[in-house]
Length: 104
Image (cartoon, rainbow, N blue to C red; front, side):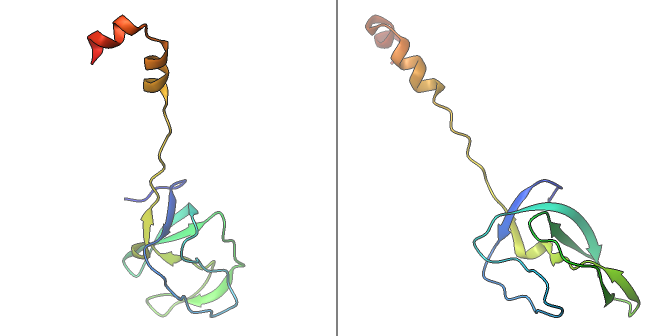
């Protein structure tokens, strides 16, 4: 579903716990995925726009690990980027009046 380089945003306002003073996602802001990982059997994301220091955490099995924080993928949705293409209108402007009558 997600891929590195994809633009995403939060689905709804989420207040992440501020365990270590880390940067966390803000609702309404677009982020670019830089890492996709699995944590506790679920996908997690890291973003180019949010870089945090590596800290000591406890994983889902109780092991202590050094890692950078990541965020639950389920909280995010892809951002659809619309590409503007005016070629249809340019083509209409360039046609002669008798050509327009046959295309309509």
